[in-house]
Image (tube, rainbow, N blue to C red):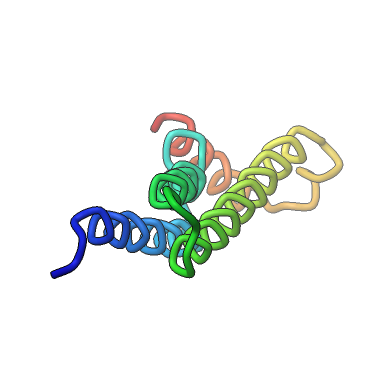
Length: 117
């Protein structure tokens, strides 16, 4: 019979890997919610779960959870930086003059939807 501690450790390792993969996949979605792409907090949870499972040594799945969590966090930060870059650039009149009025309306509607949520 397996040790109860070993079973609990494997559960935390599995959670770390799953959350790391979900973090990466959620960053590939187009709409972040509440101003922060959801991959960042999910990646943080992935790393936390891997650290929780690290009592007595880190094993393969825990390392995979840390790596996927870090990739998810980095991807989320890149998405966040790109969103901020676009919003800042839209204040420049030289950039706005390159768009048609209907395109500007679509962008403004998207930003209003993004800010309202």
